[in-house]
Amino acid sequence: MLPEEINYRAYAELLIDAGIALRPGEKLLIRHEPGGVLLARDCAEVAYERGAALVETQLHDPHILRARIRAQAEKGDALAILPSWLPAWQDAMVKESWGFLALNSHEDMDLMARIDQRALMLHERFVRERIQSFYGAIIDEVIPWCVASVPGPRWAEHVLGRGKSTADLWRTLIPMLLLDRDNPVLEWREKSRNLEERSRLLDSLEFDSLRFEGEGTRLSVGLLPESKWRGAEANNRGNLSNIPTEEIYTTPDRMRCEGFVRITKAVEVRGTIVRGAKFTFKDGVLVDFDAKEGLKALKSFVETYEGARRLGEVALVDEGSAIAQSKLHFGSLLFDENSSCHIALGSGYPFCIEGGNKLDTEEKKIAAGCNVSLIHLDFMIGSPGMSVFGLQGDGRETPVIDRGRFII
Image 1 (spheres, rainbow, N blue to C red):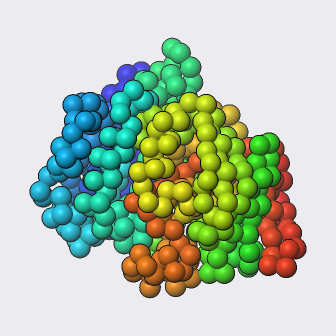
Image 2 (image 1 turned 30 degrees about the horizontal axis):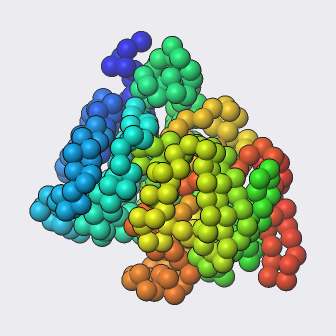
């Protein structure tokens, strides 16, 4: 089976109907890499069938970005040159409430590993500073958005091994995306309800902190009195920002994280694969880190962005999910984060804080205990041997996860 022979129709319907939850008359931007054009076309077709007023596509080719970084790495001023229309684009996206669908193909993992990491991170910071309101609208759930992945030949070999094809990977992904069900959209709605129920249970327990224990990990993550757990649904319109999703997550106290943690899965950090990472936190700050591979990229990432040394998210995932049980490493944050408990460096989610809709400035977010940064990147810390305990303010403990599985 050739890539162009794969039928993405059901997947496109899932992304438009559940991922974006598109409504008639709305506008949609689909951002894709070269390998995602076929799925992007199907998504656009479905969107128009559902009554979209306008669908636009945006091609992101990481090879072109690499060419720029190689040519301009020693010219800091050149890296700051950006299109003059970016602020107008940003304003239109936010004010007109465009939906944003990002399709990642993962065909170019490790593409950026051998270029100047400082220059790459610097350029990305310039971009994010220029369109900070757009990223803020994503974090604050002002606009509907969804992230999904597209199978391709190089990603297939990374996940399944040499000689495996795009079609092989697609067959692997189908049950994880619930596309083998009669009505995938309804199935995801049911999964979403189950995740929300577990979130409400954790809210009712009012934990002051979580303690993670496993091989190479003893980490305490403080929670805010106002921290609220969330499941799959992104906002009150019910769209699913990640497909697939298996996590429940919240915004921790930016000032309280102590101990050491082993990162259990490789993470792509801006085009470089980071493997075997270890973090140490003190008083909420990442004070030491190391990695067997990709240390330069990790170092540049942490040092380039303000707020990158504090946590913005803590998430719990059951190791019994189809993704985790596959024992596969996807090299895709979307799939890997939904196979494992994880933490995120960078910005926190105001909507995971009671009254978060009133936190409309950076100063208010910080005062409320929510981390603020231009970036947000997940790092997987879970494993089949991981245990997680919820602690009350008086020190009482409640087991939450035992050997990778929820027990509440």
